[in-house]
Length: 539
Ligand code: FAD
Ligand code: SF4
Image (cartoon, rainbow, N blue to C red; front, side):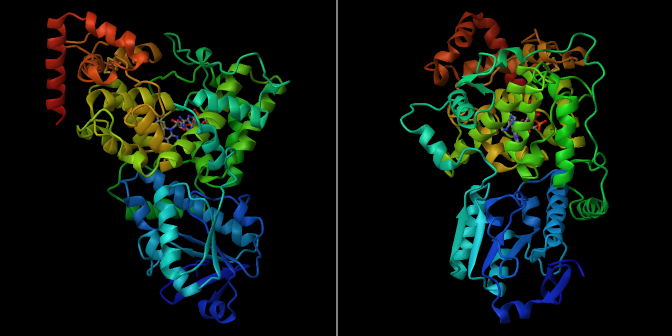
């Protein structure tokens, strides 16, 4: 019998490896607190586990189809969640917790989280439900609704995985006309003491971003250290078979699946990054190269988001690399900034502005997402490379997401909701609290400037500077109209012209708009015609 799950014979749970009939639980009235653990809360170190009574309390977890179907998810994204959840369940059982667990293929699976939770609450009748703050607004509402419907009191505890509580973020926002990550980041450095000496930033600067923009020379990256690969174990193998069977028509491949799915593996992945890639992480953070999807990136986002790793342990161990002289300040500061800066900041933005945030469309973009985002079938080399890699690995690094796939959607004028659904579906680390502000705010400027002080709009020349993609492309980044014009360069000027009025009050857009005004009117007319042609071909 599968441990702790609903079966055709009714609900069973497992305690110290033994399944016990459901009836006995109710008869003894033995569940004081039912600890609800969602798929991205896989940490025994979280506050909900701190005062748990292994005899009187129990843990509830469920795999449901709806979470994979909510957006048309990459197979690897589904597999990473299911496998990590099952590994976590087994860890809890090993530690002696009582666990109620529904597997995705169980006959009585209700298919979606709300119904599954409602059914469990009705059967188990715990005195109270306890949960760590869900990552997603929708899930928090669903939890509250299930508890209200069953009249079971519930307590949502702060998620101790994050270094900045939502209250502290609100406090940071008080009396500020606009939010900027940099000021938040400095506060976080002071609060955590990371890379600080005598209350001053180590090295004298808060931010070494300008030194983090190297591209590879014409020879490209040399002797790249391959990230550690985690061969699927029995649990992951089983999950992979389920995903192949159940989500056969879903996008992406499982051929390369080797993501960490347990805390032990995630810790190994962290050590591997610190030892082999952190040193050059800063220099080449923004660079891109054909057939090199990982470069010096950490690949830790899914482990962090599933809570297999704690953000504090990650940043402290990076700081140690600096203090022991094994990595320089530009690399270590750049890495720490991503985690205590950007990652904590986007979470704050998400919770401060949801639920309205998701409807943002400041540039009134309404074009459909081109079909090639699901197939990589395009002659634009940069997009082909990044999407192909995404379908193969469910991974792309930040600049590939922001300045290749995101930039094209922005320039084309794709509906931000559609762009959001694609990013939420396609990456192994995708969870809404971090994906949405990055997509809708940073990448699409759909929040009107909450996340970014101006749109990340650029022509094909940016991609040419940061990668070798253009060398193998039939288009030319310097051409903005005509047969070989790079679609990014055409659409860049069209974007500025279309949004000129909207962006004219943004001081940070002055130079770009001045360049637009200096553009020959006849050429601009040709460019806009070309942009219309591109759009009509993509409809
Ligand atoms: P590294 O480059 O090694 O960076 C280290 C860590 O810093 C990451 O693991 C991540 O936890 C954190 N980080 C870096 N940049 C950001 C950022 N902008 N916001 C939040 N955390 C950051 N990240 C996700 O975790 N989930 C998402 O769904 C997601 N969607 C994105 C969508 C778009 C359009 C963009 C532009 C970015 C998105 N990001 C997302 C942020 C970032 O691209 C990924 O965190 C990063 O590429 C993951 O790869 P890595 O672990 O190798 O990161
Ligand atoms: Fe992409 Fe344009 Fe470069 Fe081709 S020329 S790879 S479309 S930026």
